[in-house]
Amino acid sequence: MNQIIKIRIKFAKYGTMKFIGHLDIMRFFQKAIRRADIDIRYSGGFSPHQIMSFAAPLGVGIESQGEYLDIEVNSITTTEDMKNALNQTMVPGIEIVSVTVLPDTVKNAMASVAAAAYRIAYKEGIFPIENMEQKLQEFYAKEQILVTKETKKSTLELDLKPGIYELKVVKADAIPEIYMLVDASSSGNIKPTMVLGAFCDYCNVKFEPYSYQITRVDTYTNLAKEGKPRKLVPLEAVGE
Image (cartoon, rainbow, N blue to C red; front, side, top):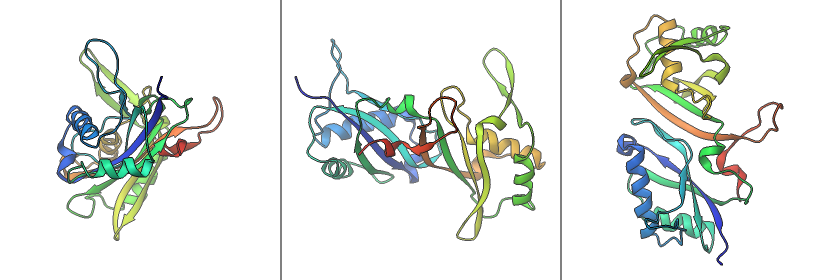
């Protein structure tokens, strides 16, 4: 029997590809893996499919520097060879950043996600908020950050504050941007638009989602034992 090798692929998604939804990205990688001649494992049964798991589906319109995909392969030469082979099959807007071999004990990408970091820029340059840095500090200092979320059956009031691990203003070419590190686990999963919308409401500014460019900086797993302080590392850091 062939040895099963677990592989974690980190990729960036940007430009026009940010408008391609998750299901189409999944189909794209299925074809790219075949074109790159990767010795991927398939499931059994009457309808075998490639064994793969994405970490956290990205919303349409959001760019990313840290998306992750896990696959299982029967054989591999080197991770650098796989990275190069995959990059030769990519299209503009998708780039393979790294390929790592995972230990057998590591959970798959989807089950490993604990947090995600984002940068938010105002497409027209400066945010339409006066004293934004001070306002953001005051906003984050609140004991609760309540938002209303509508579901198919009811309306829920959520407190975002416990799931916002970091929130600050950073500079990109002297232009202020908002940086946030938030809970992205299956039990929390705070969307950056929820935080941004709540901040705009706090500042009495109309929230217009399409006026902002959101970029996922990276996706993290928590290496801390239960009950211990968070120890967040990028998903690629658990492989070699």
